[in-house]
Length: 254
Ligand code: ADP
Ligand code: MG
Image (cartoon, rainbow, N blue to C red):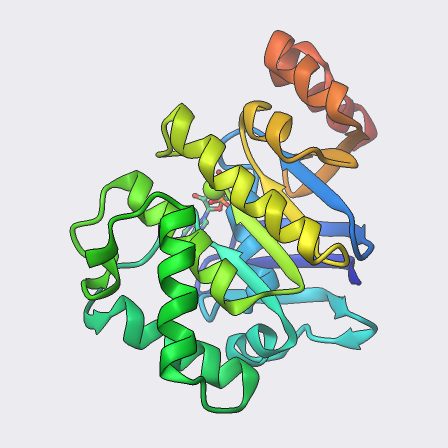
């Protein structure tokens, strides 16, 4: 479903190359996790996949269902079914959550979304996520707690029904109970839409206990330096990135 080949990228107007010769392949129905120390390039990867304007691809390609999307606009990527739950969700004053979501659904579907159906669906998803019903009328993420912002990202996911989901540190800002709620919503979605692929970016194995990954990758210095299964995440928790010696390995290769 998604293939990244030999990708190198940097932040616009900065010299520093953040991902270099990065490769990743994710098939439909698979859950992949990317872990890595602070500043490894995880959020940059998620933004590059979504076509963020502030990041430049220097080399390599991103394919989605065999289509080269390397230079595609963010909106077109969203229409193809790619979704990013951001590490730091943006506050947009003056645009209500419900206006935004209905508009986004219409843009993605390319047709009008019936208001009654929209409200019914929204209310049911809000209740599934244990969110307060007034949040749909509030400006996007304005005054939301950290946890509410993250739940709001998952509300968008449930409404927009993506085929490929990127979760950038969804677990940060969520308390234990909220994390369970959010993950059970995502698992429900994956059960109903088994072809969906997921990329979970995280520091902690806890989220991976709820949404079980098929593969766990370690990112360092803009490259995947090790791939394993869930046990790799547990090992990282126990020993740290230094302890599993993957960060050392990359130096040896260079
Ligand atoms: P991670 O999510 O793995 O913690 P990031 O992808 O956010 O790491 O950042 C990787 C590196 O790129 C860091 O050194 C960070 O400071 C730098 N970086 C990312 N975005 C920007 C930006 N907009 N301007 C300058 N540096 C950036
Ligand atoms: Mg990050």
